[in-house]
Length: 160
Image (cartoon, rainbow, N blue to C red; front, side):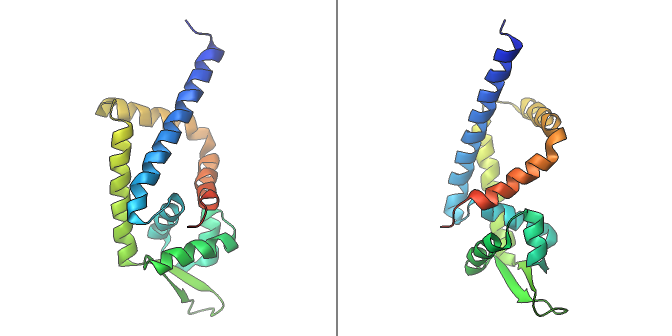
């Protein structure tokens, strides 16, 4: 029977491998849609907070406004978002998800579900549910870390 330290190391190594495998499959699933993880994070936030200011979006994504502008330029060029001057303050811009953006986000989520199904193919439905609950419990005390990791995805993903 392995020592607790050995078991923890083995779990960490497997979690790291699973994360890398999942990220690789996710990036491959998003590429045909012209999206990268940073796009997906921004579109997901915009689905919930469409019509907010760029400043509010930068805050929600925990990303520097300078980095946000480049990201929004890419999404706007693809017709996935629209930026408009705020009615109440012409110095500010609001950012909204377009119909095409919502559609692309739906396609991306379906592609990511298929990628996750591929990565977790060795697990049946009950095992996947158990894995999900164990991961939620394990990350429960680290929700701020999870939010920071999603935001880091936005900053680390280099522009095209």
